Image (spheres, rainbow, N blue to C red):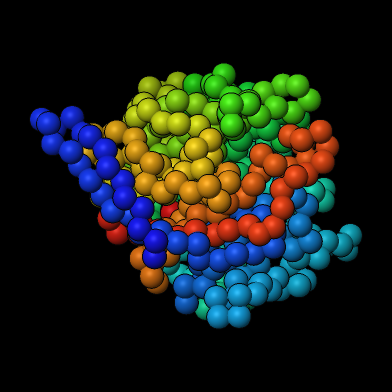
Length: 365
């Protein structure tokens, strides 16, 4: 791995804290990579970023042959009118300790009910589908990413609130009970889910659509190693928030009471993906600086740990227990047609990076 030397000062007397972070380009591929998960054997499964209308929504990457195949198979990547047992529009993807890869289908590209599809990579078969009804998903919903909380038995979904021309004002969290399939929509339009007026700035220029700044609501989301705390934030915003999982899942709490229990945890840059290590350090994709940043648990200071000119629009970040590395995609979202007068200037190759976190990462988040 290439060594990237990170040196920064902490407010501990006059000492300087130095950290060496190893990183490398793990894979070079032909299409934009969204979020990354892993099979029980440690193989990469990732979404092709839906922003670029890919033929295959999700693929498995073979590190030996450096090729991809549709995941879980061709049929699940083939839209049709006879049924909805296919993937329409996937960005969020996570795996759990049971070898199940969970894919969050936003259902926008083809008009099907949004759903979470679980594929058992141990048995190579469908595990379960959870449908997201209209009570949980509104017209401007864009379910982006999720936490798979197998301890408490819930999915927690971050809804950006920018679907169908939405402006982020309906951003929220969506809770899905793994046992019953019951869904709840929480904190819609709240102070912790909606975007701030802090546009994403790339090379000095704000990211706009039709002359308006793109402001994205609740996006990055993760949970600590014990599923005690949920961390989340709007993409466009200066604050990271956290809430105790027990409070979030307590149906006896009103939203007003719940909001009072949500902590403003730290400052942050505009960010997309989010992950965590066993010591509580948060890793977030800082698109504006071609970086992955870390919020240190010890003092909540923020530092870039990986910066590379090829890390264009760092998107999903996740930990692979098989090799002890965090993986992060370079999606080139800002080069898409919507931001460049209707013509995409994104181009292959696209990259998947991996790096050693400061402490052992937390898998399945």
